[in-house]
Image (cartoon, rainbow, N blue to C red):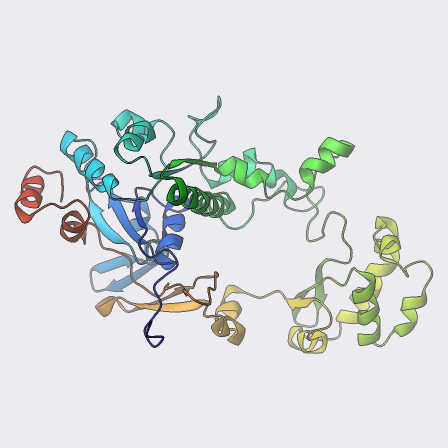
Length: 409
């Protein structure tokens, strides 16, 4: 019988992931697996480690510093330094692959094959391997070799052209959504492939492109174009057709107000003491209120008048569980919000003399196998001896030989 007083193993307990990726999209995907219980091994070139180790902000203790950016996306991983440019380094990777379930990389397509350790080679060593490759344009197609960053995806995927204000130059989304969207699709694809591999013994290549991922986030823009020939343009803080569904000023800032359905609109009319508005024949249905001219002339001024005399806190208190109304919060307000703590979305990791790092938690809440996000990230090559002994079966002499040859740091 299981002792329920003991922590439950993670949902991915027993899954081993080799993380060869750098910066964000790949490392974040592997970090999700680590949070959910997988054993994740971060493999870095000791001569050219993950560049995000140098990204701000930093935990500091005298002359010592550690990137909080790196820490947030690499928590809970074991660290190995390995020079894949050497033949011996390639053999070490192959030995690790024999016992692995998943490999994650986000190099430009063709890089791993050029090194002699691409998917076609590794699948012969481990047919069950799920090989997840994240790139700008994907592993196939005429654009596959082009260099790409987050902004590349926002530009090529159409999202950049849709963001901003009418009549002004488009504005990029304020976070690296090209990387982050690829992360989430890579996690979904990897878990689907892993389930198939566990059922059949056959792994596969999971090919996720940042540009594809962004395109899949453009909501109705594609069908608006293919059905009506309409090209999406910046709409500012308004939705392209749902109304009211935007930012409004209040006494001490801004709020989002989204009471666009008939039920929510009628509730808002009562909440703000104007029940007679419900019966106005020009705006008494959602379809009527969605007409841009009617909305701008009649609906929006009503909402502006409702909200102008109240503070953000007062409006949230008034709206409660009835009307969708939310204060536009700074990240500081979000971190300090009691609701954030209630959802365990700020977790702490102890870095000793460097201090305690508070970072975002794991949004996936599993009732039987909860995630464990409050962990530290690896120092460069910190766990090489442990990993090579446990996963590859190397003895101390073999590890010392590799280290002497410069394959390991």
